[in-house]
Structure formats: structure tokens, C-alpha cells
Image (cartoon, rainbow, N blue to C red; front, side, top):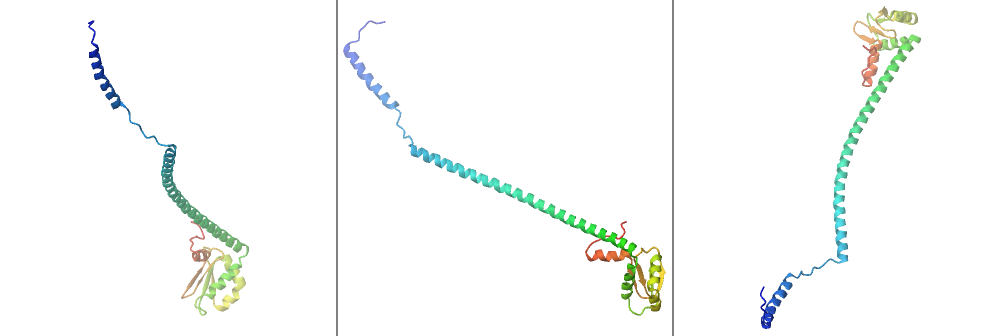
Length: 206
């Protein structure tokens, strides 16, 4: 290591040279000052962000609500159709039940009061023209006996003849002439009744 002492005038010149360079570096590296937001500005930013978030959430919620409403509308529409079908089926079942009850009541009434047949015969005869040739009634043998007992003289005077056919159910008959025929059997009369209300219900189930 050299023990040579630097002359004073040399040191001073060196120092003069170093100091400006140090000052220059200091000025260059200094960080510029930043303008920080105030409390009011921060509050405004917070409120604005909250509003934007609320609007976005509301729009998304309305979109989901609309989709859910459409789904519920389809479910209710389908349910309504099913309920209508159930109502129609119940109404049809009740009508069928009423027809079956009526059928049973007619059958029981004819068993208890077979003379109800006389009104059927009178109504059938009245549907035919007044003058008839070879007019006759065809009915069950038990009903034929009842008819001869109750209306024998009237039928004989009018030229009507009574024929027996046990294939005809009691309570019904056929009225026949040379030119016309009336089917007043129970199945046929029942068919006309149910057809008048737009139904199909056989007198005897197959």
C-alpha cells in the first residue's frame, strides 16, 4: 500500500468533482409525489361500485325469475290439462253409474210391477197408423198372459193378435203389421234413451 499523501489541492479538486455527481443521482432517483383520493372520493367510488353490483345482480335475478316463471307456467298448464281430463273421466264414470242404476231400477220395477208393460204396449200401438192389417204383438209368454188378461177384449176388437216369444225379455215387445214394425224391447228402448244423451251403454253387457 502506498504511503504517498495526496496533496491538499488534489483532494479538494477530487471532492469538487464527486459532489456534483452525487447530487445529480439523488435528484434523478427521487420518486414523484402521487395525488391520493380523498375520503369523499373513496365514498363515491364505494357507492358507485355498490350500485353497479346491485344493478348487475338485479338484472341477473330478473332473468332467472323470468325463466322460473316460464317453467312454472308450463307446469301449471300441464297440471290444468290433467285436471280437466280427470274431471271428464269422473263425470263420465258418474254418468255410467247413473245409467247402471237406472237400468237396475227398471228391471226391478218390471219384476215388482209387470203391468208397467201395458203402457209400453199402448204407446207402441199408438205409433202405428189407425188402420192396420195382420197387426200382432210379440212378447214374453208371461207378459202375453198379462196382456190377454188386461187388454184381451180391446185387442180382439181392434183385430190385434198376441204371439209369444220367450227370447224377448219381460217388459218389452215387438209390434208388427203388414207394412211396419216397432221394436219396443228393453235393449232397443234403452239404446234410444242413452243415444239421446250421446252415450253408448248396452242394456246387456257382452
